[in-house]
Length: 207
Image (cartoon, rainbow, N blue to C red):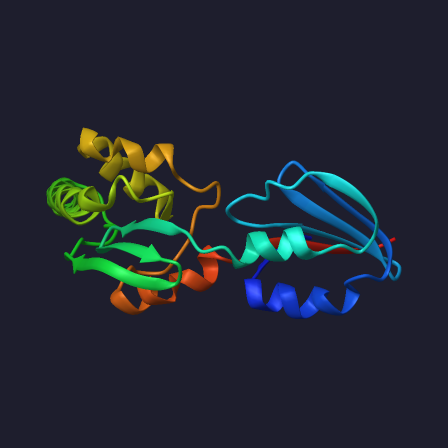
């Protein structure tokens, strides 16, 4: 089963294999290493431009891809809070975090449930609109420099934010394939995001 592994840990795991007998294949944005009775597949988060076949373990193209820093915009939203940021490599260079109370689910039926639902919808709409406004304000100055965007939190909430403002359409266009299912978006959560941003998808099987 594939899992996401921090880029430094990928290097520590694979570096001892460099130059060993085996086979290394680079294609479709992933490296496949066959050595020591194992088949290890690594897919860096921001792509792997190298293509080729090597009759030994050759890891330099993979390590180069993992080590390359990027400018990444992040938008994390749940019904209760949002976090917007820009990272240069692992450094957070712009950010804004906010929260709004949104009532939980109502267990009972009847007219009180309808009032509850309307109130909850109003609270959620206010949060979504605020998150969209902040995202435009924080991210627009970086638009030309941002290479990728990281979307996370709750998918439905993210979709609503992006639909609220046409000015955020570019975020979806540059979005990484991985959706970051983070807890309530707070400053600490945003500051920890680089580990996940640069984590590679990695699987190991016995050959």
